[in-house]
Length: 175
Image (cartoon, rainbow, N blue to C red; front, side, top):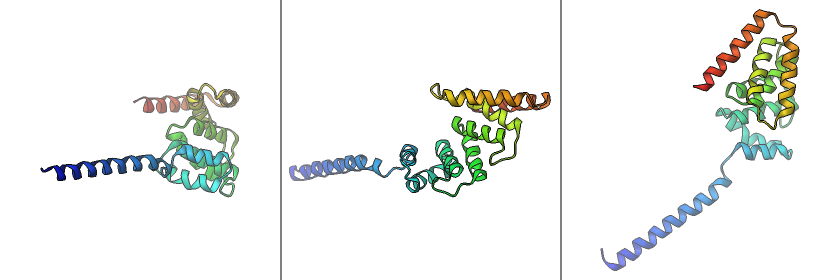
């Protein structure tokens, strides 16, 4: 290779590397993340939140699924629809979201968006209690209080069934 060709090869290499660095620098502006959707939700830009979170939720992101449940539950970005909210919370709960588990458990305990089902309420509130972050003390305490209240009206067979569901779910997720 002669000197002129080597110089041009070096220049092209620098241009390619520079182009790659520019692409890597601006790419995050176009990536949709749950954090960006949550930020839009927090400031009340529900249209933007939906545009970011819906594709992520459709792909099975549990945090995005939880936010979709919140938006339907409280009529933010959509017409209020508690039944549809429960569907999204359930997806989030099944995919491991402790917030989704908490919300779904409370819905089953109170009959909001779903029929009252104390077995399901016990299951999801127990799982939420185990998985909520240490700083989520209010939710954890409410989950435990609600779970303890429903225990007083559940038959022993229902309690046993609910506990078996918690154990089965826990085993599945520990693999």
